[in-house]
Length: 191
Picture (cartoon, rainbow, N blue to C red):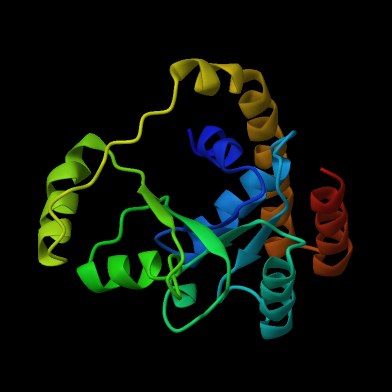
């Protein structure tokens, strides 16, 4: 569903927020493995060295990347002009986090949209968050099932690549770091 939503955005700048730095990295890797994704994807989290984060943010700000997968560290105080969409891939637990995340769009009088993926058991909590923000209305956004179903073959292919990459990344943490890390970086660049 996320990829189908991203495809509706085209080249619009979009930040996807996750619940943790590990989730940020995993989602970033998965999106990089997904063939035909129309936009360039970057990762921004504290798992990365500061120089890598700076380059990712520079690519996003400069328009070389249109999707930034980020942890909540990006939600506070970071200003990027032209962000049109915010996607809460993981629902925020606290209202302050929600406000900081969605506050990355619709800045300086510009329009913007936010989307929050929810599991059934999260809906009630999300509605209570909205009430705390004095926002009682939130539109349901439904993607056509045909758009999601059409992505199924590419999803399966991406998932296989993702599993391979994550297995090799695990090998990096337990074995020869330099050689495998270089191989992984090349793999993501060519995927």
